[in-house]
Length: 161
Length: 135
Image (cartoon, rainbow over all chains, first blue to last red; front, side):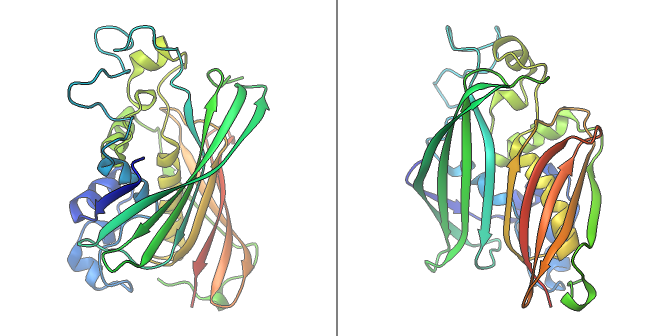
């Protein structure tokens, strides 16, 4: 991820995100309803914050104008000679919620590198784990959310046996 | 709907089916909202022919999001302090997932939960923990 990304919190994005996690809790859809809840406003669902990827200009898992994309087009991959596995899977994800967030907030998200370690696995060969820590601060500079993700690159596709 | 510590005891369980017969459509929706367009989740041609998997599979974060729905339904909105998971198995189109929270500790104004999401075969796809504020 880019070192610093601006993530505007928008009601429509929250609504669409809630739909995409199969959640019909009206606090994500209806500002009037949300007003009468304990929180008093629309809030993002707890895992919403990884959608910062939308606002990251460097995010590599998004097709970009004028660049080749490794997903299928006419052939199974748009990149010739690309290795068979894209390799990266998500191993762990942890959030800490420090302060409430609502539509209208503008978060600044900064990345801190974490640990890197390796492990041998019967199902996928050598595994390389990489930890990434993201800190989300609001327009007042207050730390609102911390995210710690662990990605794993596998030597080969995970055996389903 | 706020939870009260006095109404809870260690070992209490809240359980929900969070998705039934998971559709590729939901994977497409999740790609669109999360911004994670990794073709492994939406592009059957790439995933089977180039990457070597039997089919597209769910974003780990979608499974966490589904688990989060159960969690906020249980503890209420704006009450989570911590929520963390490990992705233990992949989730495939057609899966039906059940998420479960078990109260493992009750402290001063907060509870600790152990989380697990399992598929229709009883295989665990996510394990985790959460801390939530209670009255």
